[in-house]
Structure formats: structure tokens, C-alpha cells
Image 1 (tube, rainbow, N blue to C red):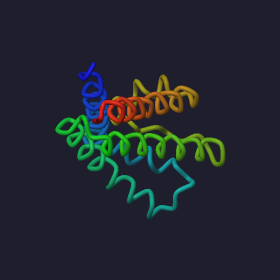
Image 2: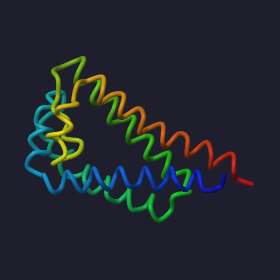
Image 3: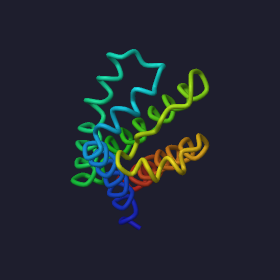
Image 4: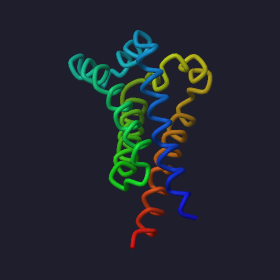
Amino acid sequence: MKWFPLTWGHLAGGVLILAGTAKLVGFPDFAASVRTWTMLPAWAQTVVVVVIPPLELGMGTALLIQPRSVALLAGFTAVMLAFTAAYSIQLFGFAKPDCGCLGLLAAYSKSLSESPFIIGRNLALAAIGIVGCVRLTKAAP
């Protein structure tokens, strides 16, 4: 099933492009949601607001172009795990953050934004990268 890793890379890339695009389209809402992350100083919140959307768009595009790249899928996995860790630290160590993960889709996401859902969703997304990496590594000559 050589098509399988290709599917994981495309899926991961599509998720990142959707997330990055939604953040840019709903930029004021995304920026406001980042301000609820009180564990971050103001300067770090600004960095997150400026860096995350282009990072997601760039990595997503790269995954669509090179969906069989173990390095890109590993990077996707690392990003998803980092987002999950940051969300968990904010949630359990500070206060419940707004998840502006999907920009304008946040209104729908807010209806689902119970903490276990977001952590579970992010871990499921990270699993996409892990499965893709494992499949690509096993398929390598």
C-alpha cells in the first residue's frame, strides 16, 4: 500500500493549510485568542500571532509538495505535540485558553472547545504524522 504514506502527508498538509488560512482570514479573532494564553508574556504572544500562520501555511504547502518526506511529517508531529503541550500547560497551570486554532472556524470549534476535545484532537492530528513517518520508514529500501 504505497499510497498510504502519500495520503498521510496530504492529510497533514491540508490540515495545516486549513488552519493557517483560517487564522489569516479571521486574524483579529486569532490574535484575540492568543491574548488569553496568560502563560506567555506579551512579546511572546505577538511572536506567536505573527509566526504561526505562515509556519502552518509553509509546512502545509511543503507537505503537499513532498508528502513522502519523513522530515516534514516528523515536523508536523512535533508542531502538533508542541501545540498540545502548550495548550495543556496553559489549561492546567494557568487558565483555560481560547483555542483560535482554526480562525473563523473557531465559532464552531468553541462549541467543541472543551479541553479534552482539543487535547484529543491535537493528539489525533499528531498521530497522522507518526503513522506516516512509520509507514515511510518501513517502506524505505
